[in-house]
Image (tube, each protein chain N blue to C red):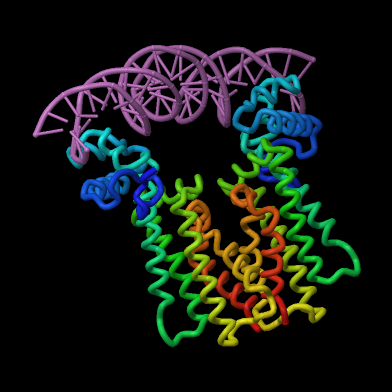
Length: 206
Length: 206
DNA sequence: TATGTGACTGGTTTACAAATGCGTCACTCA
DNA sequence: TGAGTGACGCATTTGTAAACCAGTCACATA
């Protein structure tokens, strides 16, 4: 009924509350150290000195907490990509190359340096949690933006419907965007980015 | 030492032997009915009226039997693709479209109609059994053949090194070729084939 | 009214002992 | 000598009872 308007789905009670942040901080710590499944809600409660029941005043479920952590995690990738492509005076081609390169390198680095957190993201992807859908949508928006710019500057072809172009590129990037799939493509992390970028860029040639 | 020359790896004893065929037949039956892991080597032995130990005169291991079944399975996909693209008087573009379409439709049909056998293939892919590596190589050969033909006829561009073109296309098809990955892409089985084909074909335009 | 909790339920996980499975080898039989 | 097997070691799987966990609720305190 009176759900606070600015809160993300799965949260409860006052949207900005010190306790909520403490829970998230504890969850980040515990999830990245012991993993999502080995961390109990009681563990998080103990960590911040409250009872388990109190946690549920702020979050709908354990998964909702996972969502918060996962969102942060994926937001970092998005931020890295955004930073990499938000550079003045580079071609759309170069922008696209950076998108792919950054996407893969930050994703792989998450996998190798923060495996337990990566696993949360993979779980989220396998169950289509909102956080991953949102992440996916943001990457797609970047693709749209670059393709549109490239078309306007005459760098990319314009015959193919914009939607189709973006959809197909977005799909081609899926093995790197989706954490569940990225796992299986890590063997190709050296060669695949350039290969894929080149293929896509060739498809964009006027 | 005196390994029969024509036998596939993992096999033992005389290469063409009635018993071997019986084992393979029984395995096909059992694997597709109960699954690979729920089928014991003893089950297969009983099915053909021998003891378990005798099976090992013909196969190195249970996995070697799985290999035989998996090979057949994947060979069917390869055969379907080969038939689909071995049609006279069609453009390389059309040939490529058929490759992708057939690859996905036979793969998906295996998934939906013979799930237990599909799982064997997925297991094989996840552990990189020779059968899947071989399958992968065969698909790649088809791609090479089509691209080469298309280049010769002037239908496809020739600036990009042939190897790179083939590698990138092969990689782009991975989500459909690799049974382990196909599982995760079945939601897109309607739209992805055309989308992917179009992207790749655009990249091949002269 | 806002902060906070112990006790409860029913579904899942764990722990560990028993059973089963893979693969080998010495052996039999014709 | 080639066809075929029982019995065994070692690792994995399974069955199951106990422990645990996610999530709720009525209630306490200030």
